[in-house]
Length: 577
Image: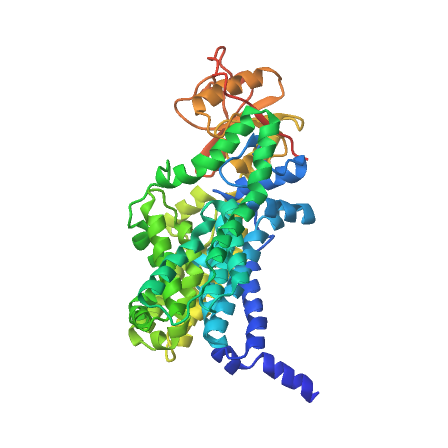
C-alpha cells in the first residue's frame, strides 16, 4: 500500500513539475501534456479551408484510385507540392477509413516529435530542467500549437527541419558525431521533398564556419571528405522520390505528366521563391505582423534575452551562437522573398524555444515582463467576457453577426473570458507569467472541442450540398465552376470540374458543353455579375458558404448559345466511393 502511495506521490510531485530536474518524470509528463494539447479534438471536425480540404482530397484520391505517386485533385494533377505530406494522410485514411481522423494525425505526430527533439537537445547540452522548460515553452507558443492542430504541410516540414538541426547540433557541439550529421542531412532531403525549403538546417554551417575562423577552438572537427558526404545523404533522400518520378514521367509519354514534372521542379521552387505570384508582402512583414502575435509569449521576452545572447556570443558559447545565427538566417531567407505567409517561419520556432530556456529564470524574474504577460491575459478576459455577455443579451450588432455567419459562439466566448479571469486572479499575488501557463492550455482545449463543434458547420459546404440533394436526383452529376476542393471532398455526387487554374469564363464555356451531354448534369457556381453561358435569373439559390453565395443551374438555366472554350480546357471527374 505504501509503495502505491509513494508511486502516486512521485508522479504528482509539484516540486518535480516546477523544477524539471527528473528526466524520467519529464518524459512521461511531457508526453501527457503534448498529446493532450495537440491531439485533443481529432475526429471532432472536418478539413477546413484553405489548404486542408485540398490535401485531404488528394490523399483520399490516392487511396480510392490507387494513384499514389502523382497527386490528383478531383482527377486533375496537383503539382504545387511533392506528395510526402499527402502520402502520410493517405496512409492514415487507409488504416482508419475516416478522413476526419486521418487528416490531422501527421501534423500532430510530427509536432510531438519536434517537442521531444527540443527537450532532448536542452537536456543533453544544458540540463533536464532546460530541456523541460524549452519543450513546455514551445507548446505554450501560439504558432507552434496552432500549426500542430492544422493539416498543413508546415508542421511536418518543421519536424524534418528540427531533425536536421538536431543532427547538426549533435555533430557540431559534440566535436564530431558523424552519424548524426548524416542523419540530419538525410532528413533535410526528406524536408525538401515535403516542401522545398527542407534544406534550411544547412544554413547553420555558416555561423559554424565563422566561429572556426574567428573563435576557433584548440581542436576542431576534421574529416573534410565526410562534410561532402552530408550533401550526398541529402541528395539520397531527395532521389527516393525524384528518380522514380522522372522515370514514370519519361515512360508515360504523356504531356500532362511532363507539365507536372516541370511545374513541380521549377515553378514551385526557384520561381516561387524569387518571383512569386501571390502572398506578396514587404520585407518587414514577419517582424511586424507575424512574430509579435504568433510567437507569443517568446517575442515578449526578446528585450530581456538579448543581453544573455550577447554574453553567449562574447564567450563563444556555440550552444547559443549556432541556433541563434541560424534563426537570423532563416528569417532573412524568408524576408528576402516577396512571397510571404506567416507559417513559413515556423521551423525557426523550436530552436528559438531552445535558446530561450536556459535564461528563463532570469528573464521571468523581471517584473515588467510579468506585468506585460498578465495585462495581455487581463485584456483577453475583458474582451471575451464582454463579448460573451453582449451576445447572450442579444446585442444588435452581434445578432447581425449571428444571422450573417449562422453561429452563436457567445457561451464559448464567456467561458474563455472566465478562464482568463481565473488565470489572472490565481497569478495576481504570485509570478504573473503563470497566468499564461494556466490560460493557454485551457484555451486550446476549449477551442479544440467546443470551438470545433461550433465552427465545423460553417467551415464546410455540407449545407450547400444538402440543398443540392433536395433539388436533384441521387444519380445526378455535379459540375463545379470556381472549384473549391471542399465541394469535391464532401460531395455525394459524381463531380466534374474544369481546371483549377482555368480562367472562369473558359470554365463556364466548358461547363455549358459538358452539361449538354446529359439531362442529369447540374452546374454549381457562385454568384457573379459577369456570368457567361448561363442565365442568372434561372439560377437556384443554395445559400452562403466560404464567403460566397452559391447557385445551381439546371439545363433550363443554359443560354441557347455559348462560345467554344480553347482546346486546352479539359473536364476532370472524380467518382466518390
